[in-house]
Amino acid sequence: MFKKVLSTTVLGISALGVMAANAAAPGVYVTGQLGYANTHMGDKTDTTNIDNNTSFHFHPNNGNDTNLSNNGLAGRIALGYQFNPNFALEAGYLRLSSTRVAGTSFKPLNVGQGTFTLQQNVIDLLAKGIIPISAKFNLYGKAGLAYVNTAISSNIPTIPPIQGNLNGVTDVARYKLAPEVALGVSYDLTSNVSVDTSWSHIQAFGKSRPGNIDFVAVGLSYNFG
Picture 1: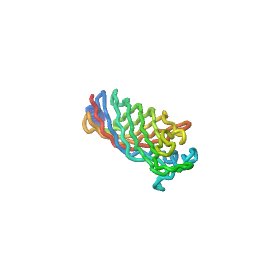
Picture 2 (picture 1 turned 60 degrees about the vertical axis):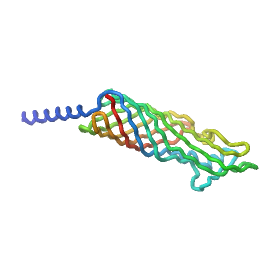
Picture 3 (picture 1 turned 30 degrees about the vertical axis):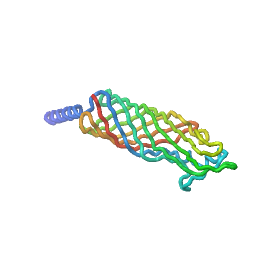
Picture 4 (picture 1 turned 90 degrees about the vertical axis):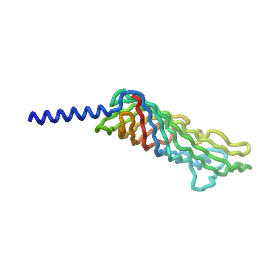
């Protein structure tokens, strides 16, 4: 019995030693992520709704492109500080896809070709909790705040031209603060380099909110510790 307890203790201490040896040392780290984002902006930027709130009517050149949905490729970079193997803070910038719809605008006694454009990006500040599950694998969760920038604009050279911001017409705030959470798993290639895969969710609330953002990505991190 004593031998079993002793063996278990030795194995446990050895495992902890291996995990500690492979864990990222406290210090500054940088990370880059690339993946797919669903911004849920299609319903909020339908050109039919824009028509109903303006003095002109817009007909997309491609009849299927009736909204400014910008789902697609997205990338995030972040700078963080890891305090210990289980906790870190990071600030990041998420760049979402932009989209543009070209069409014809009909205004009383006026016809013109032009475009509607949607651009979005996010700045976030997140706390990161890390749970080692083996010598090299880690589970992590993040929670914090995201500052969402949504720019909806038009450029239609009628007389007079219809140019500028359309956030008011679409009832989508240009800037919005929203909570953000993320879940992921990482693998330590070395004590300084790791790869990960994750899902992030930004949930906007309140009046004139943009669509919620879901971002699924793979990433690469380097710890300078």
